[in-house]
Length: 67
Image 1: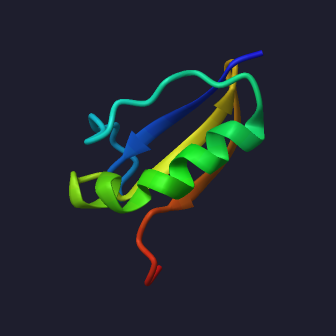
Image 2: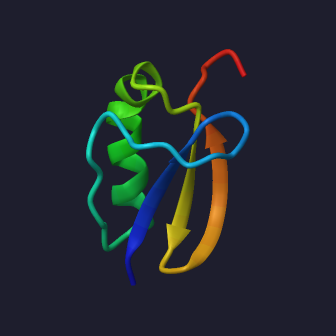
Image 3: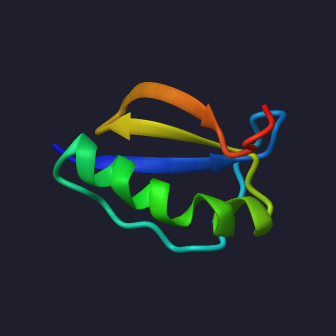
């Protein structure tokens, strides 16, 4: 199983991340990583992130702390 993030603008359009992600073997590792870099991702133009387990969408979260 591979856990990955997709980065999007607020309208759902995919955008390139300011910090290059990797693939993780656990959901916890993927979530820990985004917890460390979310501010850089937001400053780089991503408004939200969607977590996937392989091809299955798990959830979408806002990177904007005010949302």
